Amino acid sequence: MTARALRLEDRGVKHSNLKTGAPNEREAHQPLRRRMIEDMSVRRFGEKTQHDYIRHIESFGAALLP
Image 1 (cartoon, helix red, strand yellow):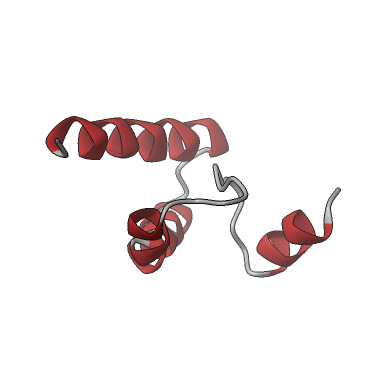
Image 2 (cartoon, rainbow, N blue to C red):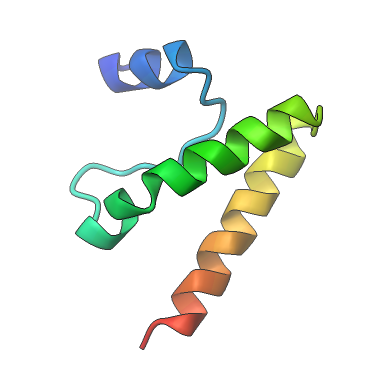
């Protein structure tokens, strides 16, 4: 694992689609993303479900932006 993956794992983030050089808009939404992952974990959503939900929200958001 990379050092970045270890740090995210230590924070309790199971799924992350973070890429190096992420756009500023995405970085601005990280608190919302973390909260969504935390809420899904508390509700005991499976890892694949969490991953799919995050992916769908990202594609929905991308469709809204010009």
